[in-house]
Length: 191
Image (cartoon, rainbow, N blue to C red):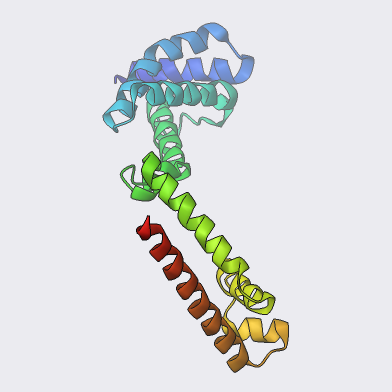
């Protein structure tokens, strides 16, 4: 860029800074906006994102032209530095790049076939019936351990029962549940 052109841009920027000269801004916009967009596209920004960021940089010129100092750099250098910094800020704020779109946890759950859903419902019903057949103290211990996720020590502290008692009651409950579910499965296979 010629020295004459740099001086002309500095004068136009001064007009924008001092009197919000729309005509001066339009000249600067017409010259720099396509170049800024092209620069941002060369940094692998999408067309739309480059366009948005270019608009943002030109708004910085409109609102903060008074911060431009022609003795320190050309207007071109100043605007491209603003564009570069804004792009870096945008990249830092964009956390989606940290996510792998192929991550299995981000994929929608597959639709369960109807026969599997029915099997699951029947199994859940059998477990609930088997749980209902347990003594109340065992139901409560199983609920705390497996539905609330408490450790045996935490259950012991909350209930005031000795740790060994908590463990043995849960073990007894599982034995009863296993037998009830096995008997239920045998009845199902006889039909």
